[in-house]
Length: 119
Image 1 (spheres, rainbow, N blue to C red):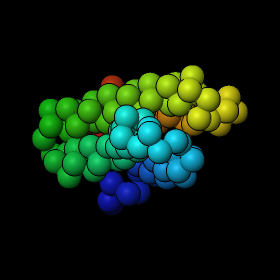
Image 2 (cartoon, one colour):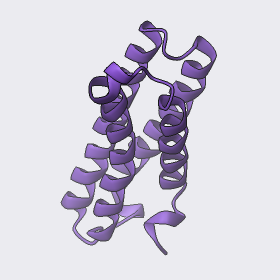
Image 3 (cartoon, rainbow, N blue to C red):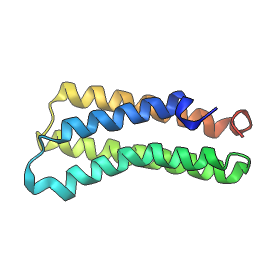
């Protein structure tokens, strides 16, 4: 089994790609402050999970990386709030992306609460 087979990775990857597409229309002056940061944090959810899965035989390492994934997911939610406040995305898009991010967070939380099932 690969980290790619996990629902959390599939959902987080899908969300990162949706954010990539949505953020293409952010203003040029937001290239680093908002666009790059939002893309980076959403991608980091997947990357941290992949790193943790690779070291899953070490429970503490696995938990630390899954926790990092959760922190990056929360950061992504914060950046999306700024995008909404700046009117770079509409409420419907925000709600959809936030809902998907919340689902990713729940899956990560389950893994943190039940590490033995994954290590």
